[in-house]
Length: 248
Ligand code: SF4
Ligand code: F3S
Ligand code: FES
Image 1 (spheres, rainbow, N blue to C red):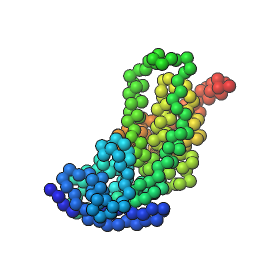
Image 2: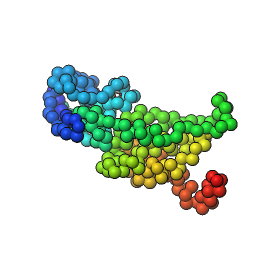
Image 3: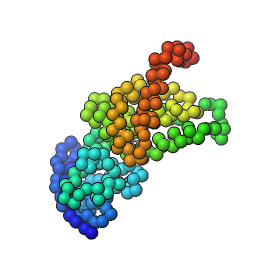
Image 4: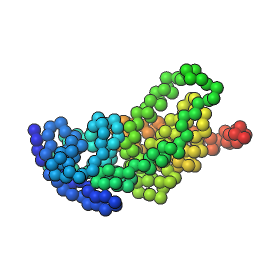
């Protein structure tokens, strides 16, 4: 069964733009991205919208739908009533290139600043043995599809451009936590998390966890344990003293 939906879509580039109203056909079983593609095909051929897999696995189609970060390809039209106006805007935390497409290079810059997995030098390939619990922990974090909706929604940078140089966002604090908790990683990542990547800015609002399309428990399983590891290091006098002596 088809119907006509009311869409309000952000159009613009170079920091200038406006919301424009469209009426677009919707067919049974469609998602928001289908409707945006129909809009492109029939009324707005120059509408910029990024997508790739259409299966919720590439993270490209992240946008804000009625003010909430969502994947366009995984947001079913059946979740809205037929008379509702659906507002689609680009992710707010990153600069707009055109229409719904944002420049997410902030995230790649942060990724490059994190030292990669560093195993001990004397362990050869094939010699690593891990407990299942350690494997499971990494597996959860590695479900990340890098949609960057968690970074987009975190208030530390969403409303405060000035914090961006000092805060990697939940996606990359989770990456640091994953490596810090890895039994074979020897890099010291606690000071990096706290002093360079702004773990202390996170006040556990859990908005990141709420929007994650992979349902990763970012706050409970990565950020809070990482905060505890930093606190153990910094505020336990024996641990602190040990870290000073043995790091020399
Ligand atoms: Fe997206 Fe979740 Fe990865 Fe954040 S942690 S980038 S919300 S998949
Ligand atoms: Fe931001 Fe998530 Fe912390 S939204 S404040 S990183 S719990
Ligand atoms: Fe790949 Fe939506 S197009 S996640």
